[in-house]
Length: 279
Ligand code: SF4
Image (cartoon, rainbow, N blue to C red; front, side):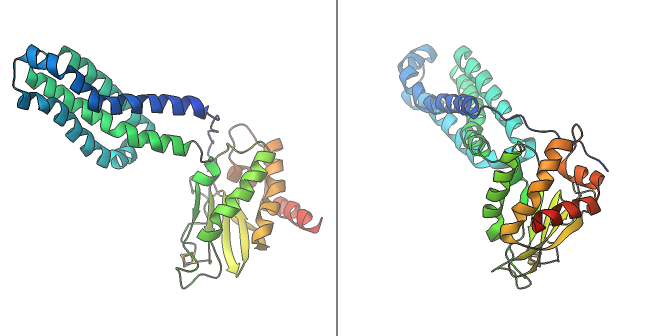
């Protein structure tokens, strides 16, 4: 199955950061700004001081509840969709607060405002952090391997970060840093991180050495094949480098790396990798 890959256009992270920080600022300001309006609300609604404090308390309670649920809501709806929904609820509730004709309506609007505002700050932080993560890092997966797994032949999780650093450097060189790749690494052939079904699979064969698999697909619907049996950790990015170069120059429109490798053929890719090792 061939899957079209949607390349991510690099977003301007400063615009994103500015947008979410501004919204977070308004949410935090809303906790305390209501105190400024307390004297006017006392007169407007004709209620006691004890009653009017519910306008502040209701917002805080609703906000705190949603802060604890923000991660779950993000997973349920998607981070961006949840952020937009929260922002819309917060904005609509702010308008309702301004129009509230009674204390009860004001408290209800403040609860709604807190429910919208509660998700904005934690999700804003997640959005800012996510913008610094490249697609290849985001979609990389490694099993625990050493020292947690008694079956491990070599490292997996503990080499994930330095290995992705090296691969990112090669992708940058070929203008592919914002391409979506799935890379799966395991410390033994048992394959707990599903290395046989990603764009790129790395399977530990012996201490410090991995087999390299390519030709699966991002969705994991096609098995990949081995093109190198024993690469040391330092040689993995070197082996992938000529494949990235070929992918950058010869890919079809919308084609993912795994689909490209499958189309070119494992034998041809093996020759390229062997040639690079011999050079
Ligand atoms: S793939 Fe192997 S090393 Fe990794 S967790 Fe599974 S059994 Fe352990």
